[in-house]
Amino acid sequence: MTNRNDDGRHLDTLDRDLARFSNLELATQYVSRPMVGPGISILFVVLAGLLALLFLGQTTNTLIVVIAACLGAYMALNIGANDVANNMGPAVGANALSMGGAIGIAIVFESAGALIAGGDVVSTIAKGIIEPESMGDAQTFMWAMMAALLSAALWVNLATWVGAPVSTTHSVVGGVMGAGIAAAGFAAVTWPTMGAIAASWVISPVLGGAIAAGFLWLIKSKIIYTPDKIAAARKWVPILVGIMAAAFAAYLALKGIKKLIKIDILTALMIGAAIGVITWLVMIPVIKKQSEGLENRNKSLKVLFGIPLVVSAALLSFAHGANDVANAVGPLAAIVQVAESGDFTQAFSIPAWVMIIGAFGISFGLFLFGPKLIRMVGGQITKLNPMRAYCVALSAAITVIVASWLGLPVSSTHIAVGGVFGVGFFREWDAERRIKAARQAMPDRPSYGPEERRRRKLVRRSHFMTIIAAWVITVPAAAILSALIFFGITAIVG
Image: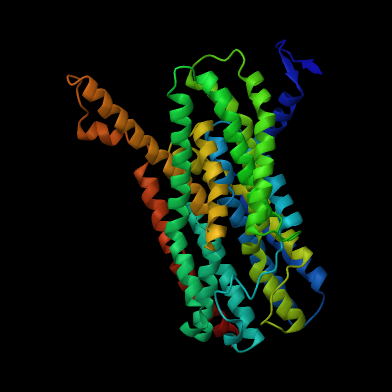
């Protein structure tokens, strides 16, 4: 069914849907004006406090829980502003999605992931960073969790302001570690766990970058650098989409639905393999039809990767909402349980109203402040097209599976941004290799001078150094800030 607009052009159902997304983009631009966004954020934080008051009722610790709910809402807003860019940035940078479309999809799938599959039990607190028993009493434990929550939120807020995508998981870990040390000394920290997290600072981006570069090499060698690109695409694109389907099926089985059903890694891989084969078979006729009439050039290939890239962005958002919502509300859930039962040594489940604060906070943060980081990740580190962005998305899913198999704690931020770096540095290496090959074939060809070689770098070094510096100092910075806040709280109440 089609309609005709004033220019006489046909506007089908898909076009109308995309038009709605463009309206969403205009709305986002409006609320991102200097005073509107912060005003809506403050209103949301106040509503979170009222929600806590409604569900908790009057207890001796009501005020503490209300304040903690406001801090949890503030943290959720910052996760939406910073962390979600990792999932949507590549698709927007590749022009597979408009900014409005990306925000709309992310809001739906982040919220769905948080509300449907989020809320897994937070064992002890923040993955066993500190020993709760070392805190001594429930009151000290609650102050420590409040300090951790506030310090993590402030650090992510600062990182978003300077344009650096940082790990919200590491921010919370640093906050909990700093508060734990301030409350009970260095012995309170589980140092082997901290060592594994420190190792993930290097492992996550390197592994994500290597996998993304590997798939880009595969696409270039098997499709782009062939005489008949369309024929090669008809063979390889269904395989690549099948690999993507397998990776995401296994990823979601392992990480995205763990609240609903526990699945071991072998079962997850078998599920992924089955879905991957089915997807491959289904995509063969789809890609064949899609490629009919396409010209034998690189630009034509982008059409074939558009839909898989949009689907991958949506699935990454679902899994992110399911897993990272705990960064916003894990310490809040711990405070709620201690306020209600006085027990701070057992695992903490996340109440539904706490999960709602986290889910809606992430969505509001993305809508109000997300475009800045989305543009940075998608277009300012290196230039992306649908094929390169597809490699980044696929590497994110595969890296998490490999890390789960190895038992390594990893950061979704480090993996995704590492994938962008990997694609960019591979392009630099590939371009340099081709220039050398051309020079050997034509020795009289003039070579580039130092200035021209610097200009031709495909990864912006300033962004690279800013992001790496932010990653390195995230845990210690959040820890120091948390310790100072803890001492401040105890000084005020003590």
